[in-house]
Image (cartoon, rainbow, N blue to C red):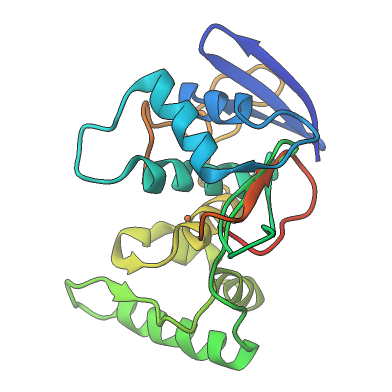
Length: 215
């Protein structure tokens, strides 16, 4: 769980259990939008990010970009997602964010999908593998952990069209996001400089704790 948060200028450092993580400016602003002990909607977090940095330059929506940043923080246990009172999908932090996502699929279906993804990655095809709608982010990650292929999937994310939550969790599990330890420099978690590319608007985000149903 999140035990400490130090802010300097536009960046910050958090301690999660025994790990120290450096946060980018946008990740710092997202955490700021989710005060400890509260559950905040993804829309509210997005509005705060846009008010701070302005709208994104591309065609992607600010909410989608913010959502991916939230998933990165959830994957590192800085934030957690909790069920909303209405529909599914928003984040919740230690601070919490609320959100909804696909239902959990059964392990057999997840393993079948994983094998299909691995066959695709080992082929010479140029297209990205598209995760079936029935596959939940949790199901894919759990299957990858069970079969010890997390590093391989994380190294080939550019060839996978998978939910943002699964992408963030695979990167975190593979150690792809560099951590700052003991004040040493490194690439901060959520390193993009604005809202970046990970459910429905009634779930909420909050700090630390167990992750609920998803965004």
